[in-house]
Image: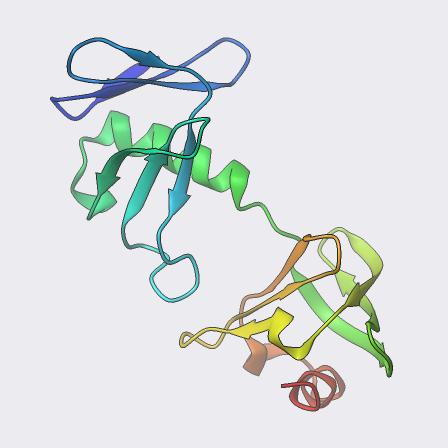
Length: 157
């Protein structure tokens, strides 16, 4: 499937990889689609980045893209941003790193969080916790957590 914005296009390969074709027809294989501000502006700007890390395209407003291109980019972002959703925080053990036990939409998990800065709260009331291996866990709404979970989280940040 190929979708584009006029000057450039993206093409989904049979193996699922996404390629970028610039205005002159040069192909950049295996590109990434990244949100510029995933926590503070989840619907905001998006960048298409080459395998070497260089920016190939900047999209100020994905909502204004043609539907075929927007669909491809949304699919790519949803695969990249598929994070376990924390439904309950069962315990947080003192120490550095702190050991968390949580219930998620994918079952029970235990992980370690190195620093309070690894618990990022967003203006929309959500939060993202990053463990010591770089795995991220999402809380869509801190206010919707049970009281025990909120107290544990509030004690950390």
